[in-house]
Image (cartoon, rainbow, N blue to C red; front, side, top):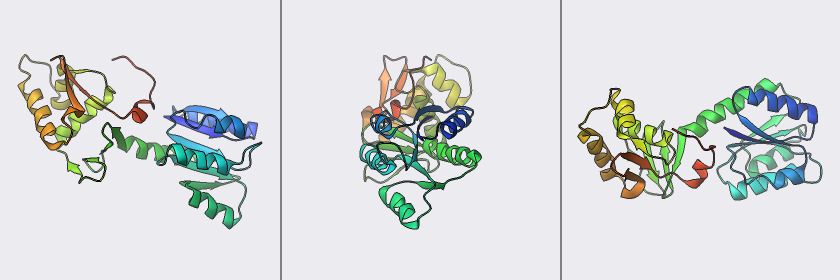
Amino acid sequence: MKIFLVEDDTTLNDIITTSLTGIKCKVSAYHDGVEALDNVHSGYDIYLVDINLPNVNGFEILKEIKKCKPNANIFIMSGDLDINTIISAYDTGCNDYIKKPFDVREIVAKIKNSIKEVDNVVQLAHNGIYTKSEKTIQFGNKAPIKLTKKEMALLDILIKYRGKNASNEAIEEYVWNKQSSDDKAYVRQLVSKIKTKLPYKDLIENHNSTGYKIHLAKEYLDKFEKEDY
């Protein structure tokens, strides 16, 4: 999980960074508003933004984040307890307003909860959204498509490979929890079944007859560093 952090208090910045790294988050930490503003477009999952920053106010950063990532998870951190400031932060698009001083464990708890929400939603090609908790795929304003348990398992293994080829053997083991066999008919049948539900048949692609891959949104792929399988 990639976290964007901008906090001009060096000590607090280091404490937050260390705590979030401890829960296996990759943190890009900034101390200056100008530098932070230049880097908000780098594909982060969660943003932690202080309001009172050198050179650029945190509200300007908040506005820029919402402009480039309308659905971003954004936490404002501030010692400004004026109700008008708090309301303005929410009106501008923050998800939560964390009042200073705070216990860093509060930040960690909120980030953990936000990670669960982020992991629950996968962005697919064709403006598709796969929501695991709802067991649905939805494309734009079209009606949600309900998935069976095995269809969800198929999507999960294909998404795990992040746009690369998932072999028939890997799919077989993951979906049916058994070793590979020569007969791949049931893999093809499951893929065919889910494709009949989809408005975009090319979302899942037969890859050189050796397996399948799913096309994910570039923004979703940008969350991850390259991995080999």
